[in-house]
Length: 421
Image (tube, rainbow, N blue to C red; front, side, top):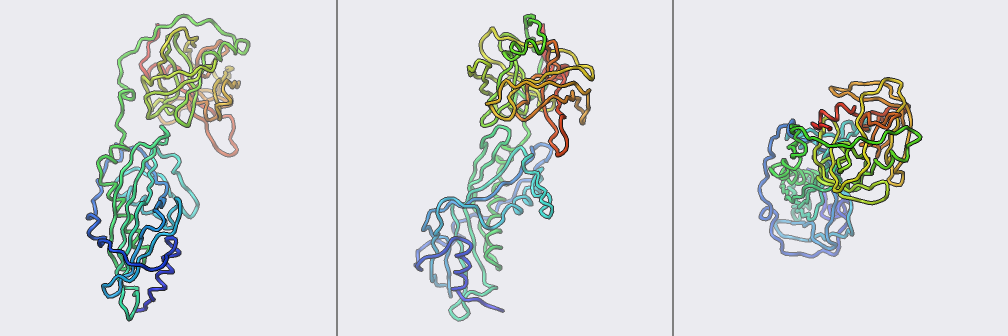
């Protein structure tokens, strides 16, 4: 069997883990005594969990911390300290290991669909998992005569702090730390990947992780509410575009963490509407009125299926819209909102209602009025200033323009069980 000398191994370690310094021997317990046996991942029901993806692995180890050891004939010969600084991305590609383990455990996974054709759908996942390695230790074995043999065992272990990011709520929703250990014959990279796999399987064995990415609905998302009566005064009739300034008073910007959307009032006592995906996963949001005043709003009801949500602000005296009927194809429509950036609030665009289109089991009003990210939750208005629908989405594709979609007002009423009087 071909062998390599221990100095050659140290060179390999320099390339992979940022180097070694003057050899020294530190008394450290064998890794097998530190790391617990491998855990068995829980098998989950995909239909009860939201879509997940995996981002990356970072290394954050204090400079000088011991990360490895060479042992010849059972005698420790040298410890290898970590010479890196700051936080860096792991050079070993752990993503494919994580994707395989998630799928094996039954989760619905997006990401790494085709490495050959650079197809990756990770950005569409509700939750993204990532890890930071805070401790690594490996042991390579050999003898004085043959040095480090290719068929000699390698021990590898690592501590990883896992985080789960909720892409809708724009916040970290779960944190957990696991440890992975392996002792096997093979290359250094193979041992490190196996140690990573064991640490990741420890995460998948936790019921708390399964709960964190489940589809369990909160009371505001149960979609089985009793009728909610909303008392409205008769809104002053508008004529657009002449009364566009009066319409602007009834629209607000919804600030949900680092993201934003649009909303509008439907009653003088603070009820408002927005898109469900704008406020998904959170109970309260900040809204900025057309005057610049910022108020807190509570998410009262949310229908992810219909993509509409009901907000409630404290106070009275708000100017509100009335909900109208489904528009005829070719009717003039107006969109008001905060597209792209909060600096662009109070933006108005005009177009026509192109008709009703069914996607899956949901009907939408299609319009060629300009709709962009940030317009979600804003009103689609008629010439008379009535809300025809709530802006939900736009088709993003090269060569396609003017395809915006709104949830019809009738769907909004039924999805949220709203009764107006």
